[in-house]
Length: 439
Image 1 (cartoon, rainbow, N blue to C red):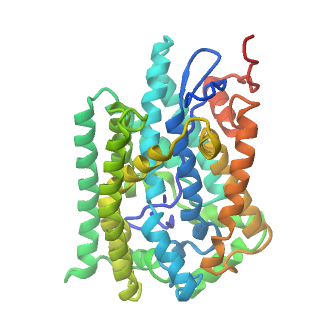
Image 2: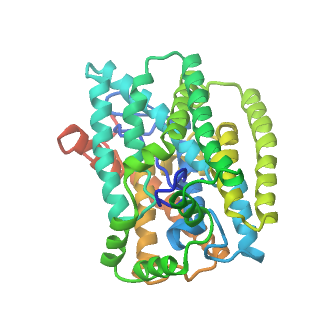
């Protein structure tokens, strides 16, 4: 799902997501997998690596949302093609990518919350104050992203849910897991009630039914034309359209806040248990990856196949996207995290480059949005590319991420957006240059 249309649908999950990367000044300690700052603050290479994989993967999930009308994110019938290569592209994305990268980001967001709070308190500062200040700044940045750059912003939503999640930071691992499961079940129960109305004798209200059809099926032709016209126009026209159609982060908090909170708490538990930081054995990670992915990916394939067999019926797309998919997503994201940790090699080749992309994931995420805005609105390409062709952009963007990120982190303490976030949260401009290594 990362992430779907912000159309005030009664239940939806958006395709985009971001985990705020850590903002500590770092020096490279080669061959260790951990980077140290000038203040001897350790950097966890495993978290950077998983975050790098997630920011690269989220591009795959978000490409249809960047380039096609919002409803096409869930339903290929809405726009972009639903036969041949376009159908295959939708299916592969649904099975392997959609929602899973957002799940990783949400987990890592929760883990990073604990990391930031713990380190603030170890330095004699109020961890809660530091965290809430960061969330306030993230919320403001998210609003700019949402209304001026891309309707699929997840930053403002993460800031709101992150402020709520701090209520749980003192809980032990088992209670974090328990609340994660409870919040997910509550979310699924609420979504299931809507699905029951769609299939049952008691239909939803006319307004709700129209919203669901527009979000998970084919919107009315005039609505599609209006969206295409706005996003093929000037940047100002696109911004005006987003302002009137993108909705409010408060709506998103109500729509899928429980699901996001559940994933953040799972990330806190996984961090506390040492799972996300590489403290488990390779055998344990291999077992988690094999079982989690071996069970859930075939289930996603069955759900996707039924979506095709149903003719992409909006009721089934709704059920698949907001109930069945999210129900098994936490297991899939844990499997992906385990698989990533199995492939992690500290500061070597591809691992080092991917970890560098993860260190500046915030900048990579927002930078991708800007590039896509310039391509599809600035060059008037919105809605003109078939779905399958969009994925040709992925290797290009990945190449850019993997080229600039290592170059940047070798010279600067933070990514550009990481630096801005940290500076605004601290109320002072932070130094950007990495200090020279002693000796």
